[in-house]
Length: 423
Image (cartoon, rainbow, N blue to C red; front, side, top):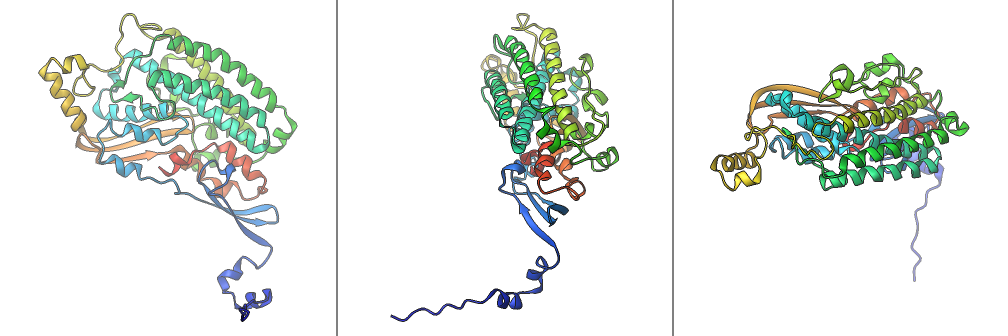
């Protein structure tokens, strides 16, 4: 049997026949490497094209879009309420807060934002603050685990499971809740739920303190985060950063304070602000934000109109049958309510023509919705201002000069979600 002849070229011969583009990375002392899109420390399908001079980064280009689903285009074929489940998939670590932000934008377009019942406002705030704690707990746990602190991850995920239990008893779902509706919320809180939120506040406060004891003065954690990934106040503003990443750089801006919505104007809480703008500051800001969210939750459960189990039957949605689905008992017995339900389900609430923008303080920053309406039950155009997309835009400026090992700390401190970034 004849032996197959193999055409093996020596390395020198291969280099001699290589194209100029192939040789570009072989010249000089710099090397180009890919981090992601399948990498545990990129927190999703983010790809970083990094140029290295030894261990020092000289250039970094984020490559996004691997999770793009065309949410904004899909909205043009959806009625106002039908798009709510799609908002769950934006920052999927805080779906309750996404629902609320979108509903507030549509309610502003409809002109009913001032008429949302007080109990509904308090329920929405409770949902938003639970979502903020949940998202920060995951961000902290993943950040700590990336740097090597496995125990913190176990603490934070135990507390997040309790939030999922609360979400399940309120909405019927643990992850993709779709709880909010245009004009209110799907249903009132079940019996004992408000008391369960109060008990959760007591438990999570102790766990936040425990996590801080494990990290804040830990020599390894401090060395891996302090003076790493410094974002100046001017750069944070110039690149449109919002949320903890902006406040970590010393900018005292929180949408809940600057442009209060729902019942935030009636609640007392402080805005956590850093001074240096490094990874350590961003960590401290999120730790304090969780404490402030617990403070807000305590006020809400104490002040909620109607009390814990709502014996006075305070409404949780607007009374307008052309905006919110009428009760089933009325639909089955009255012609007008039957017509309202048919129109709402098939065509959606009839919104006026116009343009509105509404931004809410979400865990990752300002989640904004710009709506262009030509009238009717669907938007002509919907644009989502995703805070993760804006926060990632600073990476080409932030990473050069860092060591390759610092990338994990920087990405963990920015705490982004690619589902929201790519939309």
